[in-house]
Image (cartoon, rainbow, N blue to C red; front, side):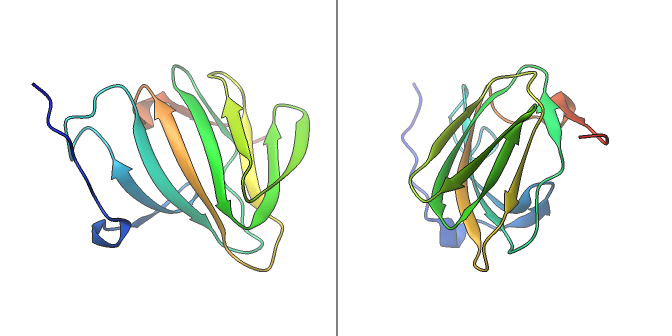
Length: 124
């Protein structure tokens, strides 16, 4: 039987990832979660993620604070606090902070994030 798990973001060690400063809040190595993971990501002003796609993973970004621009294939959209963005697997995407304050978002991945599933796109 799986056990519930509660974590506060202040207790999670962060690291510099391809999208910005990352804290993996809920992920299979830390708890009994198995079908998804949730990470808190902070994109610094003027910075952006590397353009990439996932072979199997579907991803959702939920913008907690700030604003920026999401690019999915050839489509560009402004995003700000309160926006949710669904990114199907196979779609090249990148997010850019266009504001003078941090862009803070949740990244939800199903199945859970796996670096082996990521393909970097250099000509995006």
